[in-house]
Image (tube, rainbow, N blue to C red; front, side, top):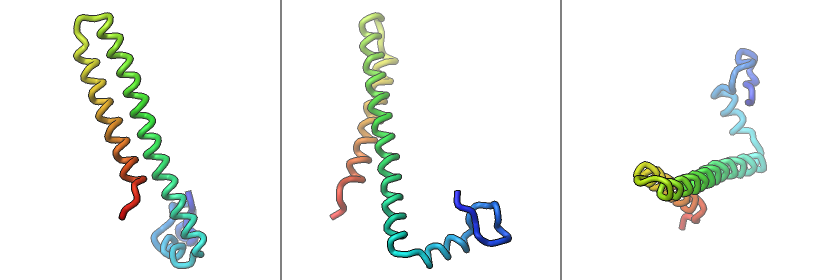
Length: 103
């Protein structure tokens, strides 16, 4: 975490004054780099959510298959699998919306 450069703020998170000064005096290259870092960070979050939801969907699918094979009722597994499919679909939709250029 960046620390504030003011003497009264030493050891604390950056204050509004220091963040405003950074914004005012940063170079264009720093602004571009910061914007790209933010975009990469957002993409990582979306990708992690997408991969986690797909993994959960696969696990619940295997659990559903097992329950259907071994038990007379698999309603809980069907419900879990349905929720996992909806979650995976929502994560994929969010990723697609983020990657689709705004025209």
